[in-house]
Image (cartoon, rainbow, N blue to C red):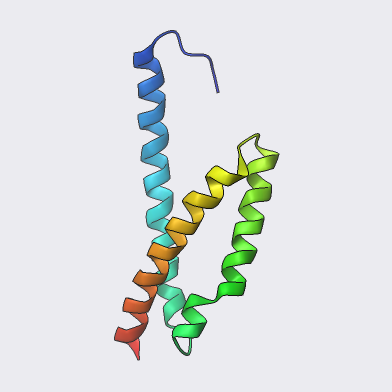
Length: 95
């Protein structure tokens, strides 16, 4: 991380980071789709205990990186809910 000299530099860095975030979410999606084939039913897909484990883990990572854990929790809950929907759709096609 570096200090930017102007707003344009800030925006360029944000755009670069957004590009990486989208690539990582796409990679995560690839594995989420694979996970569907290993699960027996929709309860396995929804896995509330696993969700809470993930939330706890990423909140700790947020704290370790000087990020408000509430921000990461909101982002992850929304992302996980979207992936659960995707996984349920994928799961229904594989069974």
